[in-house]
Amino acid sequence: MRIGELSARTGVPVATIKYYVREGLVSGGERTGHNQVRYGEEHVRRLRLVRAMVETGALPIAKVREVIAEVEEPGRDLDSALGVASRALASHRAPIEEPEEADLETARAIVRRRGWDRIPLDHPHLRTLADVIGRLRLLGLADMVEHEDRYALAAEQVAEADIHLLMQREERDEILETMIVGTVLGDALLTTLRRIAQVEISGRDIKGPDHDRADPECSLSTRDADAGPSAPVAEPVHAKMAMSALVGFSTVQVEWAVLR
Amino acid sequence: MRIGELSARTGVPVATIKYYVREGLVSGGERTGHNQVRYGEEHVRRLRLVRAMVETGALPIAKVREVIAEVEEPGRDLDSALGVASRALASHRAPIEEPEEADLETARAIVRRRGWDRIPLDHPHLRTLADVIGRLRLLGLADMVEHEDRYALAAEQVAEADIHLLMQREERDEILETMIVGTVLGDALLTTLRRIAQVEISGRDIKGPDHDRADPECSLSTRDADAGPSAPVAEPVHAKMAMSALVGFSTVQVEWAVLR
Image (cartoon, rainbow over all chains, first blue to last red; front, side, top):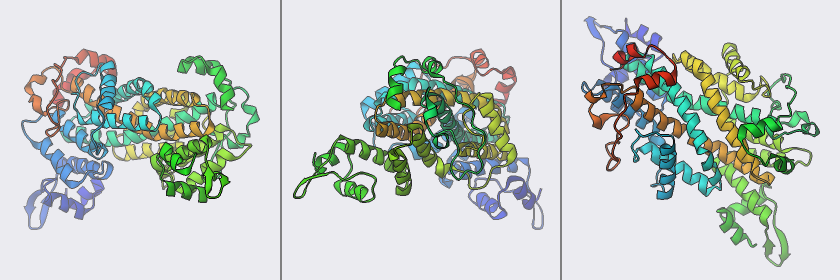
């Protein structure tokens, strides 16, 4: 295909394609005559991969080049290329200061308890985890750390779906593209669903048995003032005991009083 | 306590405390004499809440004022204040363009399948979800949407832990502070654990049975080149069948060949 069609197929402007070729991120097409260059399906795949890294992953060109080099190195396996991409995507999250040893130990203990024995104990992701744990501790949410095993279990379930998705791809470039887009948009997916579930569970549990005292127009689960006409709000269920079973604590009776 | 002690207790500089008082986010202390103002525990709690919104939540002062107004409105219940805070934290994620109707329908179907019947079908969080779904679709990851129920289940488990944490707090300001810090840092916690689990599962599953061909120095689960001395890497287990059971698909034999 000509460069115009390549641009249309990938959504990458012609000038940007030429820039990527100059930067060595995409190979040049095959010269077939005077001012005629032809591109193939491998260019479509590579451009999609580069676009995923630059646009979705917000990686600088130098990082993109690093990942591409890894993809193209003949001796390297796919797992290695995925590792380079994963660390590149995480590099802007890496803590600036070295995390405290106690927080690192907490991070390692979470990993050990889940039986994750393939991740080296000095992996950069573990330092990031220790950094988050330290910030929670400083902000008075040390008890959130007790819930981390539940977070870790949820993360494991999601990661299994993620790796399954990768394994349904065939081409190296496609697998990497899926990994990069899936990592970035998957974060957005997961955190958005978490907020939705919080609204749901808060409406069910915090509102509690005598929610009727509250003005229905002002609750977490009703609409934003400027969000347009509201859908009918489901009748709240008095799920005090159900919640107690779900979250596994027994002092719920005391806490209802406190929360209202 | 004097303003200096208030500053030390909360980590908020004296000039910033005075600014928050002028902006009406924190009430002034009790004047007890010439140039003497005393502050109490309620100021400590309020300042921590404001700090959480400004520093951890990165909310603009106008949004902070909105949440504070909600907290102080006598008729409003806690659920309502939580709702305002939740929407304020999400407002920078809201899609600029209206999501497509088909993506909104996909988002609503996920919510319905999980039985989340308290969230109105026009809630802003659902529009954000539809936007993420649309971007996945445009980037060729429509099949990730099939995994969204797994994402939704994981999000629900995490949200239950989150709401449990809120219910262990007693004061309104403390509950809101926990909700804001927990939402923001909880996202970081969850997405970091997801990356760690991906490394773990990728090492276990993608590497596959004849991983020995790969250079052990280059794998996803081994160390970064500049990450200091490496911990011993656990011997990979040939978990082909284990993974097949975990992620529930049957074409694993074919895919091993493709992935190497």
